[in-house]
Length: 170
Image (cartoon, rainbow, N blue to C red; front, top):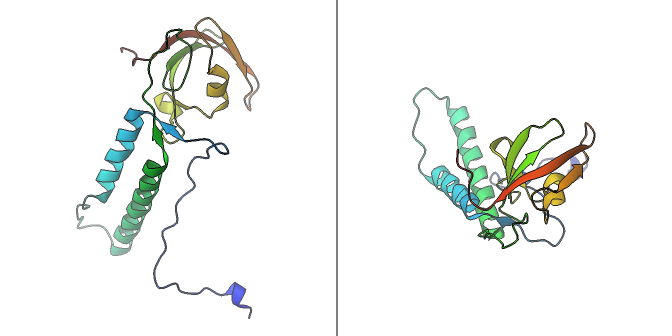
């Protein structure tokens, strides 16, 4: 049998990093100060001693430990690679990295997103990756302007109804 089809033991299990968000070729990966702190806190929680659970089978506990180590390694790598950018309100209120943007869709529904780095993006939480098609269409726009974005379900048009560099008050 060819050696290519056999498994060689490397003497230990290598931790494989799950794929991280892709950054565009040659571009830096930016992150907001809040996103950086959040990733640091997650890393600290993962590297703290995990509480022992009596009823957890040994194999399940080992798998959980490996997964925690894998995620901690991924976070450490991300934190080394990103550049923290403190968004500052420009004079002209255009949309740039870190802005909170309120959009109105064709049906009159309003949604607010913050434009953030890909490592902190979570659309369900209102954090839109700066590399997403919608965020790229919004960059440089200001209140009152419209953008048209292609989606798998078809194109949609949004009108910018608000731009802020301070968190919205709830």
